[in-house]
Picture 1 (cartoon, helix red, strand yellow):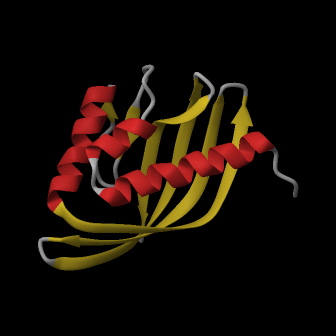
Picture 2: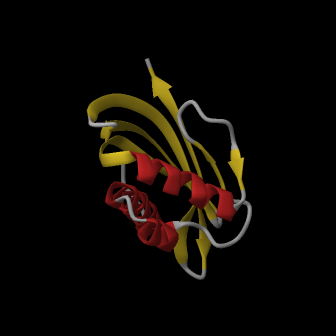
Length: 130
């Protein structure tokens, strides 16, 4: 299967999103988050959160409660349709919460929107894999 430059750019944007989350730095997350609404997130086990400010605040809450977050992204697949793209992947997450190491698998869909020529994450949905 050949990949286009746009698909490669979306996979790179997906990787940048995970680097921002791993950094536990809201300022880095700000750089990859879509500016235009709608912006949404469904963290594993959480309800839908809508609106850029509330989405950013939800990540800040996670960052405040995590000592470490490390992701291994398995089999990312990029799909494009005009100015929208999505990546389907599995996250292998290792985190430290409350001094305890937690590991898990999360089935994820990340939706990106092209804004001023850059792919920015507009929706992240993660579901735990039992």
